[in-house]
Every structure is written in C-alpha cells, then in structure tokens.
Length: 113
Length: 114
Image 1: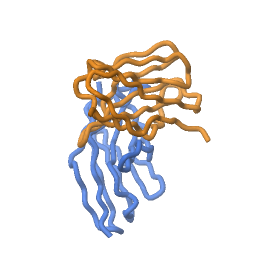
Image 2: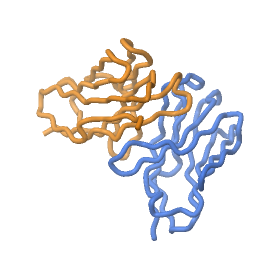
Image 3: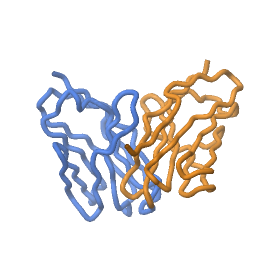
C-alpha cells in the first residue's frame, strides 16, 4: 500500500541534543513538507521540498534542518538551537504541484526531558 | 499570502444532528480549499476540497460551501456520528494561487455526544 511513514512515533530529547525524525513516502510524490503542531494550534510550516536536492524554509525554520537526497525521504533534524522543541511533528507529501492536497504521516511526538 | 481562520474553536453536537464548521479566508485569489479531519494522536486526513469556480461540493455525508463574496467556507456534516469527533481544519494555498504549500486554520474541535 502506498503511504507516508513517520518514525519514531514518540521521541525524547535531552537538553542540548540533536534528534532526527524520519519521513519516508512511496507515493512517488515530488513535494514533501514538515509541519509543527502545538496544543490548541494549527499547523505551522517548518521546511518544504518540491524536488530532490532542493528545499526551502517555512515560517518557523529556525532551529531545524532538513535534507532531500532521495525523492522518498525527507528527514527533519531538531537541533539544540531549537529552544522549545516539544511538539507534534507532521510530515506530508503531495503530487505535482500539490494542488489537490497532502497525504500526511501519522506524526512524531517529540518531548524534551 | 493566504490566511485562514475559524469562527469557533469548539463545537459540541448530539449524535444525529447536523454539524456546521466555518472558516474564513483572506486572499480572494485563492483558487482552492481543502478540509481535513484529525483524530487524536494521528495525522490529518483529507475529507473534501473545493475549487473557487464552485459554490458547493458534496461528498459522503459532507458538503462544503464556498461564498467568495464574503470569503467564507463551511463544512457541513450530516447525521453526525461519534466517529466524527475530531479536529477539523480548513486549508488554502499559502500563496493564494500558488500550488504546493498550504496554510491551515487553527482548527475546530468537534465533539459528538451520544
């Protein structure tokens, strides 16, 4: 079955650590996105990529980094520079242009301990 | 750019009632909108979309209405069931007519009481 897989489902980070969230899709989608969701909030765009080896900052990119070495994969690293990383992270992908909506992964809940 | 917002953060209905969730947008050039449903601890799921050349679109138990004059859209759920309890988001293109990036409203929490 085609879909988009995020792992891990839960992740705990110590202060000062970098952590990487995985996102893999087998939908042959060109575009991929990372969103952050805080309680009672909507979705805020962190980074997006419309093609392999290219990506752009979203609205809240500070403290995050990404790579897009393969069409199927778009990992997100939460760096120690991100001072408030506790949140629910959602990865999404879309076909050419993304005009007809995203397919979302099931999310990763990141908690700072 | 586009921004979308919700009139009400929460909506509580009885099972079997019809639910109406509203959304306002700012960019009159936006050419499509999408509704998503997010259950607790899960990623959002596509429900229905509508293009700006339409006023109404129907799906299974759901109808989306678009009023371009007042820049408002709504999601109507008929005969609401407990399984409809979730957060509902409207989304529009972040750049108005640009494809790709979406911008999302805050969401409306729908609670269905048996």
